[in-house]
Length: 262
Image: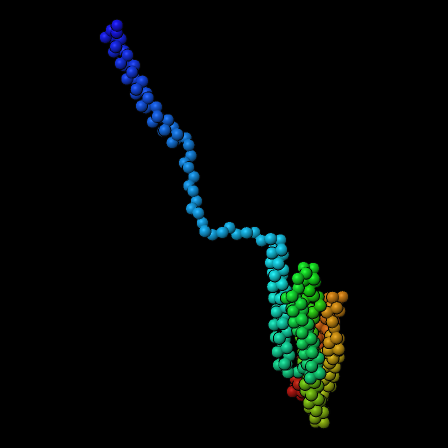
């Protein structure tokens, strides 16, 4: 027989258990929410296919195309430079016909050789051969260090020779003035000395400039490859000729001044 007090105890225990049952799931859910990472979002499907990495053969072909492009660009640069120097040659005032013809022939033969090489490179399918052909653009043509500088040296030497000729004519005129002053009884010893010095400078300038064409016109890329200083003597000769011409002009002025003082 259950007493009222015991009945009340049983009811209280039952009420507590019921409350625990109801609260437990909520507490568990709260823990799960606070300690577990949120689920990852699913990426939306894409219609774009994945890019396939190129195969070895494709990579090799792409590399060859890149090398060909660079080499053909270098040939084009040389063609443009040769065209420009040929244009300059056609406008030069003091170059002789013989020298111009020889230089034009050299420029044209170099340009033709580069064009043939461009065709070979375009159709090449062997990497080692392609590397050798690209190297040939430089070592077998030497456009920037031989062909174009040779044109400039010949133009400079011919210009120096033309200037020497004009100075010789001026020296002859000065000689006539000295002869006239001497006939008038004036002292011309100093102007005569200056004139002699002027003619010496002119002669030296002509000797320096006159040998440049013959020294450079037949040089080949192989000559340059064997000796990178192969143009130095011609450069020095042109420089010396210019210096001698300046000295001749200065001596001519002194002749003129000496005649005017007397």
